Length: 626
Image 1 (cartoon, helix red, strand yellow):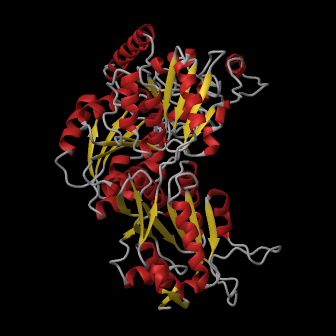
Image 2 (image 1 turned 120 degrees about the horizontal axis):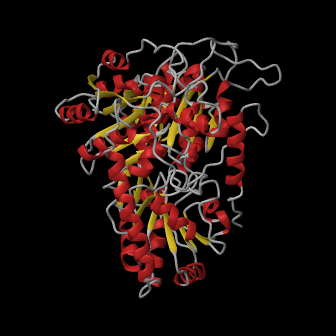
C-alpha cells in the first residue's frame, strides 16, 4: 500500500481539502477554508501545515475566536449546510473562546469544524502554559468543555488516530440530521508527529446527501388528515430553506390554497407578497399568522423544531381539536407535539404530498378569511415603516428604510435583541436566502461575524447587518477582517443606549428596565426610567470606534439622513457603518402572542405583582399537545 509520511496536522489539512458533498447531482467542495488565530498550541502544527500548502485550504485571519465560529456558521447557513469552514486555535483561552460559537452552531444545526490545540499528549512538560490541572483526573483539559456543545468530539492522542476521527467528523458534519459543531482536540505535540498515512486517505471523497421519504402508509395517513382539514396551516421552518424546497412549497400552496406561516429560520420560504404568505408565527409573529394559527385544525410543520417562540410557549394553537403533521429530516422533531411523523427530506415529502392532494383545496371562505388578514397586516407593516416618530425615529422606521432601499437578493443579518422579533414580523422578504437571523441561540455579537460568513459564502449579494449597540460592543472587531478580505458589509448600527430588548421585557415584568441602560450611575442606581434620565449619558462614540476599525462611517440623525446614507453606502467599496439613534421605548406590538418568562411569585413591588397576575393569565392559555 502506498503511504505518505506527514505530520498529523499536514495529514488533516490534506484530508479536509479532498472532501466533497453531492446532492441532486451537483457536487461541491465541502471545507471552504480555515479561520485561525495562532498560539503556541497550534502555530507549529496546523499553522505550519496551512502555511506549507496554502493552495489546499484558504487561511482566513480572525480577530476573535468566538467570532470566527460565528463566521463559519453564517457561511454554512448561507450554503444550505452543503459547505463548512474549519476554525483553529491555540490551547487555553483561545480554545474556550470558541465554546459559545460551538453552542450556537449546534443549537442551529449548522456544520462547523473546530480544531482547538490541546495540552501535550506525552505529559512530559506538564503543566504547560494555559493548562488546567485537576486533582482527580490526569487526562482532563479545558477542551472537555466542548463535549456538551459538540455533535462529535474526539481528542487525537496519536497521529494514526486521525484516520477514524477525521472520517467520523465528516460523517457528522455532512449529516442532515446530526450536524452541528464538530470538535477535534489536537494536542500540540501530536500535531507535529509524523506517520505513514495510507495514500487513499487523501483521495477525493464525496459524501452524497439523499432525499429520504417515509413509507407509503405514513404519507397516505398524513394526506388523509390534510384532506379532512377545514382550516389547515403550513408552518415553514429552516428545513424548507436547507432542503431547497421553496419551489415545492410554492407549488403545493398554489394548488391547495393552504396558507403559510414562517419561523425565524424559515422566513423567506415564500416571498412576502405571495397570496398565501402570512409572515412570522408565534411569539414574534404577525397578527395574520397568529389569528390563523389560533383557529387551525391541522398544522403541517415543515422543517421546524417547534421552539417556544414558534409555539408561543404552547399557546399559539388553540383549536381544541388541532392535529399536527410534522415533516422533518430529524426524527426528534418529526415526533414533537404528538404529531403524525413524516421523517425525511422536506422537498421530497412536499412533492409526495402534493401528488396525493391533487384535486383538493381549501374552501373559498377560508381563503378569503386569511387573505383579508394578510391585507390588513400588510397595511400595518406600512404604518410601522412610516410612523414619523420624533425626535428620534422608531426602530421599525429604520428597518423600513433598509428594507425599501435594499435589493431583492440582498441579505439582512441579525441575531439578538429586539430587532430579530421586529424583523420576523415586519421584514418583507423577497428571496429565499435574503433573511439570515440567528435566533436558535440568540447570540449577542453574532451579527457582524455572521454577516462576514454570509458575504464569504456568496460574494454576489450585498449584506446588510442590523446590530444594536449592545451586540456591537460585544463583538465589533470582525469589521477589520471584512476589510482585510474585501468582503464589504453595510452595518446599520442602531443605538438605543443599552439593552433595549431586555429593558422592554424587564418593564413588562415589573422590573422597570433595571440594569439595561448605558448611563452613569445615579444615586447608587443603574435603573432605567422612561420619564427620568437616571444619570448622564456615557461619553461613548460608537461611530468613531467603527471608523477606528477601518469602516467608512455615516451618522444619521433621522430617517431621511438614514436613507441618504444607505444610498451613498452603495458606492463605497469597503465596509460601511451607519450609526443611527432610535427611541428605545417605541416598540412593535406583540399581536396576540405570548412568551413564557417566569415572574417572581412574591414581591414588595406593585408592578411585579401586576405582572405576576398577567403571567397567570398567560399560563392559563397553555396547551398540552400529546
